[in-house]
Length: 230
Image (cartoon, rainbow, N blue to C red; front, side, top):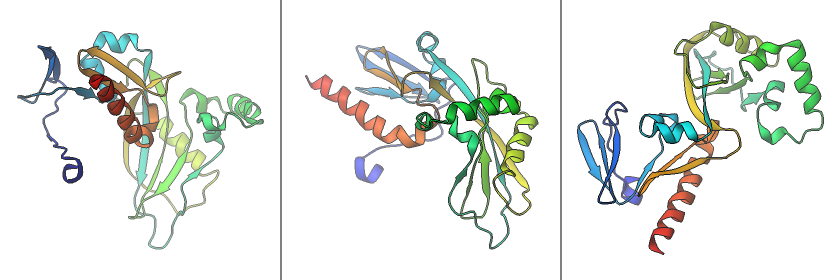
């Protein structure tokens, strides 16, 4: 991006404890890590972390935090390959793309009745394999204002157990466990706010950030720069 679009990256300075955005003479001043920058426009794309910058706007935005747990295995054998990424029945109730399936309500009722723990932790199971032969498995979805820093072994056990119902793989040994988080809005594809002059917050894309980020960024930046020229 630096070679093609002259983008400069300031690495290792974005400490959220000291990050601030203020406007002086309508020119935003960004401060972080003991350094400061001035810019004609500032776009804040920090996920739910933007609460530390603009707590009132975050509180009124209608977004909710989501915590998810995931795992990665040790390499699985020398020759065994998963092939395409896999999902199973639980995933049908997680993504809105499947809402048109006529039998989805019956499936959701059966899962809620027979295995309510999947709904309680927002679990559906995806499996993929990287070039090193490691499998990545997940995930769960726990929503709320407070994110518990402690992971639940019960969730990992449920993910691994359900994996065994649709994937026959060699013995899996878990090498890494972690959790992530994002901000999600119930009704909007993304949340775009303007808390200060020339400052735009873009967030709330939920778990689709890697899918939507570049297209959304182009759309938002182009629209706002076009409006500024009018």
